[in-house]
Image 1 (cartoon, rainbow, N blue to C red):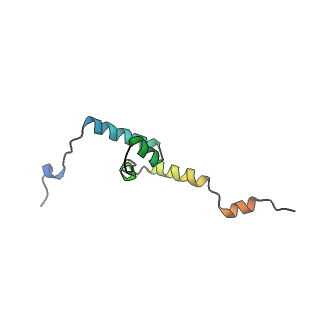
Image 2 (cartoon, rainbow, N blue to C red):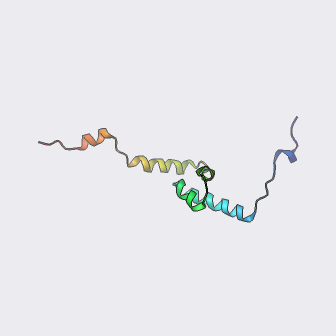
Image 3 (tube, rainbow, N blue to C red):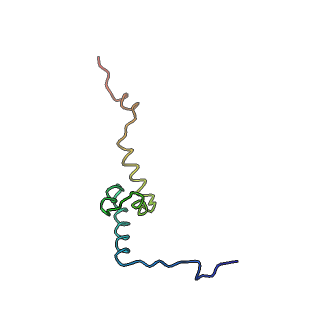
Length: 86
């Protein structure tokens, strides 16, 4: 039996302060890839709370991954570039 529209969606009362704080944290998480910096800025007690604001933006995740892997050089490549001593 289908539910009536009034029982399908529950409304949540949010204060202006809470809405503004949530919006700010979401925007901060969009531009800052380091979740620990966002956690400290928002004064969250747990990183789990901060993770809620990282809405799975694939472009941010991909960009962060590419930045971090671009600086890693496999050991095999470093051996190839090292000149041999004569």
